[in-house]
Length: 242
Image (cartoon, rainbow, N blue to C red; front, top):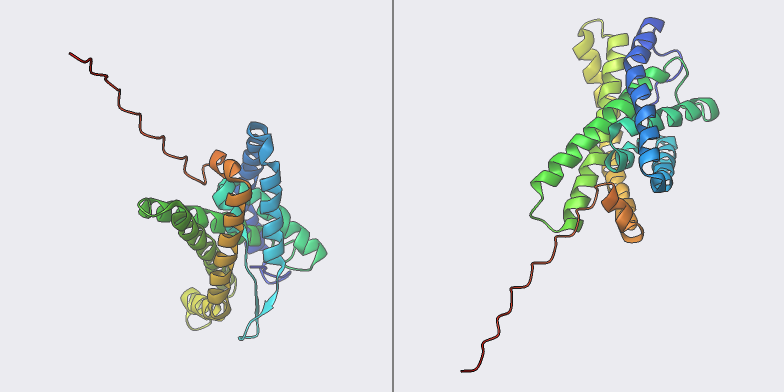
């Protein structure tokens, strides 16, 4: 979610910036270590950042008069874990605020916290949970389900956090925080639910393509399960004729 410039009081903007800063710093360090440990992962890392930028740059008018967009953080969270996605998501949001007028500089910390911090962690948690519950299913099916729920729930969680951020900044005169949160969440969810489903399906297609052209890369990153070793052949005993 892109909270525009001026929609948050400076105290809230500063607080969300302070809350997001440690995650971003840790993400930059994690990304640096990941590249040093596996230089061949640079291509997938760049693809994850590009996917996040392209998906979150889409601005789709909502039937409620607002605008919504996918987040694109699920792919990077599954491939490289949430800390790395905090760094990539911050770069994405910074460039969008400067080049596309999506979001603002004063609200960058709040946008980073919702989309690049909470979103990736929800994605990774959902992915791990679904993968654990689908161990008995074929690898392609289990991976597809895990990626779908990771991307879809990351998208929904970002808008849920944004609703809370706006409700804290602009409480309802009668209902307070809860009344404002219900109003903001209702507006965003109308458009975001179908968008989250579409984003999940698109991410599944991307991961299946990657599993075809870069299967070894995904295995090295721990996304694809390693093939089970073939059972050892039973020792052969030759009977001597009497």
